[in-house]
Length: 164
Image (cartoon, rainbow, N blue to C red; front, side):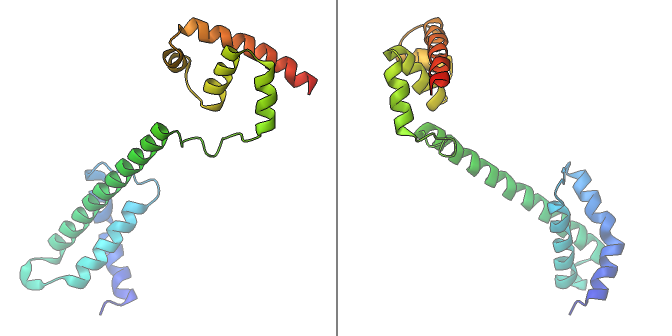
């Protein structure tokens, strides 16, 4: 059974070991997560140590290093999965749920005061957050044409904003 005093002594003696492996693996531990993982590995090493297998020091080195590598792999997998989900959401058009403006009456008033091309600019550029190049590609026009729609739409939107 590992007591608190025994573990505290072990940590004070082996703290440099954790920092050594964090440095050796080029880990930037801004939140202290890797240090905590190293502490847990140290505790596990002390708890599961078999004197017949080798020295405690080499076993602790092995456990800490492998625990840190496992955490790097786990974090990398998590990051990749989050990136895939974000990419899927963008492709499905679900990436703007927080910023979505849902006042339908406002949009109807805006649409009524604009030409069809100006409304296309408002819809794609403001509502759907697309770039000028993307809009031009979708509408099969030049980027300059889209910029022109935007220039006239902004002018009308300013007038509409002062009249409301």
